[in-house]
Amino acid sequence: MWSVASFGHCYGDATFVAYTSSVLEQQWLDNVAKWQHDVCAHTSNATMKQLLDAVQGDVSSVVTRNATMLHDTLSYFTYALRDAQFLHVPIEPTMSLARDPRKCWNIWSEDYVQSKAYLLPLSESLCRTSYHQRPILIDAGAGPWAGKMPFPTLLGNPLEPEPSDFGTSWIWDWYRRHDIDFDQIFAWEPRKPEWNVSGDEAHPLALFYRALHFYNTKVTNEDGGIDNPLTTVRKMCKGVGRVCVFKLDIDSPVLEGKLLEAFLSNRSLTEVVDEFYVEKHIRNGAMKMHGMGTDRRFSPGVNDLSHWYTTVTNARKKGLRMHFWP
Image (tube, rainbow, N blue to C red; front, side, top):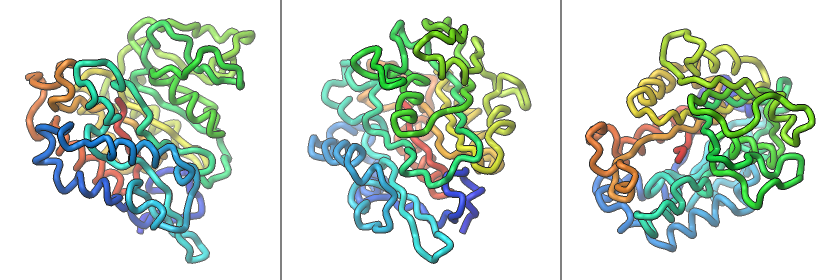
């Protein structure tokens, strides 16, 4: 068994025991190599509903000692407590496109491309630790938010009807609504942001701006470099009780791949991250309109669904809550 220090700080008095694929996830693991060439043909409306109902249902918001509650749809991490009891903490299964499967309804539409509805991130109820230090977000590829005012439900005062689909805004909004407030946010984005980063204390987003360290530049993979997000992970995510969330989405497949490999292969990094999101440019027919059907930058066996399934499952089996970021 691994010590809890091997995968983050969310379960301070527990030991990671195992990761268990749900029945739904295992079905896809067993068949993805042959199904990935026509993935939408194997993604039924009933399966979509099964996934979305599960991640949005009551069982998704609680830690359970009854693994049978999670067995069919939600995969889960098992932790041993000091009282010889076990906790089973759910996470969305890896299945279909790895993103919101409703993309299959119309592969030539932007609908559901940025949807996060299939994700099951941590919440206060899923994270048992008492925070000795406040949570931290490291966002490599924050996004310009396309002119939308981010963080609509901040302070309980909606600024627009629905949360923005873009990176930092969605993450901040999700965790805040689930009782996890980031004390510090480190965000890189080379495009000019369409929001105020001046830290205006009178702005409704004052809490966000006080937490934000914004770098209007590209990330690098220079070992120890200040714009290498792994440097910040190494420096800022250590410490008892500091919950750390890391997102990697820089729209540069080669650099993204190098950073991903460096992160996953370094236990001293993965052991201090509680939740990890990564965008992967996966080739399949449903993504043709986005240049990921026959794009020559990608290699079969490296940028296909089968490879992604293996990568994420191996990481989860080591205790890392790893998610596909759309």
